[in-house]
Image 1 (cartoon, one colour):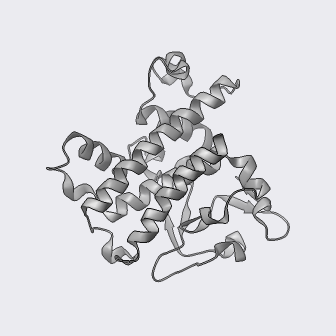
Image 2 (image 1 turned 180 degrees about the vertical axis):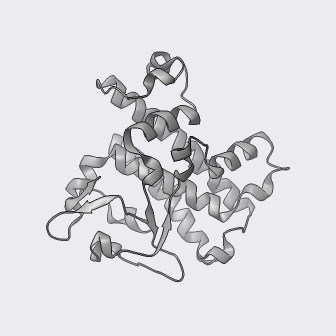
Image 3 (image 1 turned 90 degrees about the vertical axis):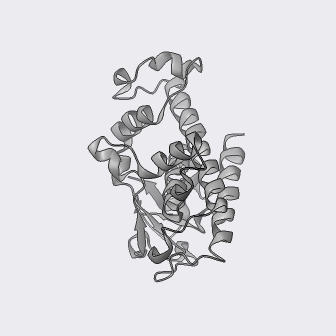
Length: 220
């Protein structure tokens, strides 16, 4: 169920984003655009991010994985058991400590000035367009602007409506994509995932080994 469920969720969110780009061009000039449609997608994407990270951390810990910073997370064992929930700060401590997510970038394939309609035809180091670093602030121990926008909207959608910006939706989807590749690393390496997953983003954190093939892209 793991692969079919989380990837299906992501693809549905990605399709909604791609559909929005039919009406609003994917360009920095438009990144401050906000709307009810973008708000809905931001809320759904960030909610899925939370669920995906909860699942990832619990799966790894239950399988015997010891996170370097788990002692810094209050009630870690209760949260792993499901009797309490991890929060965004917990994810930052655990996942930044293990995977240096603040350094991970994805190429935004639909960007107007650097369009990659099929990035898998290129070597990873040749895909050089508009780069997105959704966890950049984690390196300094800070939260992410797209997550703050999400929490502000949850608390008061009417007053914080203008936080539903295109840039926040793009950043949140990029964050989900990175966590998705981490959770399903084996399937991505084997090339057994749908190529539709690369319509929006291409992972710049994979190194190239051997011939050009999805199965030769490795997490690094």
